[in-house]
Image 1 (cartoon, chains in turn red, blue):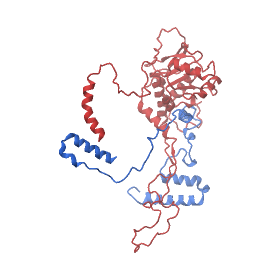
Image 2 (image 1 turned 90 degrees about the horizontal axis):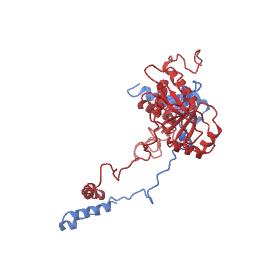
Image 3 (image 1 turned 90 degrees about the vertical axis):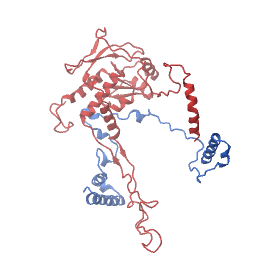
Image 4 (image 1 turned 135 degrees about the vertical axis):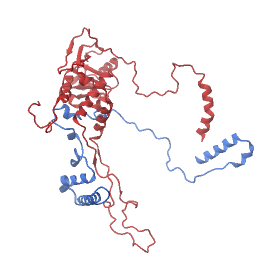
Length: 302
Length: 131
């Protein structure tokens, strides 16, 4: 009631006030911007031109379709804090340049959240609640409502008629090609938005986490960084540097997934990781459909 | 709260019209008090979005595709053994539980399981439109 009266009286006052404000370009004072809005003037390094003097460190191994051309990116190094790029690398357009299918990303993200989900919510039914086998009072003559058991769902302390039952699983699998396409779309989205960085190797000069943070802040990679490498063992300096940092995470290439790529702002890949990913993801474009599961041996599969 | 509303309504009516309505202010009471009593508005709970579990969520979900099909994502699920990589309605889950774990169960639990399976079988297959 109070708010209504204030609004009714205040509306006329506000209208008279607004007209005295300056101008078109100035932001209104009550504008509420979200806290995680990305600054559009973030350093966008221009993509490498064709006549660049830096060497081409990696060409595409797989055959690129004739109507597409490989994409070029800078290859950087983690050894110096404000290093210049070391060279160029070519990326396969069918992995890093696919169309941004948001519906596939949504499906894969939903799958990742739900296929592991097991809900342990459980309620007892009237037959499982302790007691309640005897009829509480006789059917007729006592003046009370007729009941057959003290644990029926109407009673306080009785069983639940349609409650959650036992551990329930929400497991399902998306088709393999949809999951593969989800990975490709996520990588292409990171590439297109300038959040994908290629590094020649993960050698860091010091095991100092402050050095990594300064490097990330200087190169404006973003708040959170996901570092992916193929090797089973990571350099010790990098392991110690990332151990304390929450927002900089290190995963092997086998662990790459859409949820992690969407959660972290920047993704850093090494040249071997790119080769591994292109190898694994492009195979699905031209494979035969399996007659028996792929985990059983095939003659021509490695 | 409702008494305050009544007073303000009375105040508004007083402002709008002249002295003729001075004696018509009524207080309204609903007869109950607020059951939830707090000293202050509770603090919003602080959720750490970057703890170990949340930052590493979903890693190895593509272990089949990227890892030569030696493992399947359903091997990663943490669940009772009769639910790993299986989805079904209640009857199907209970039957699977009885098959896989039935001889290890306690007597009362097993008895309740059998009762429930019998009830659900009869309910699904003998009543209703879909049988």
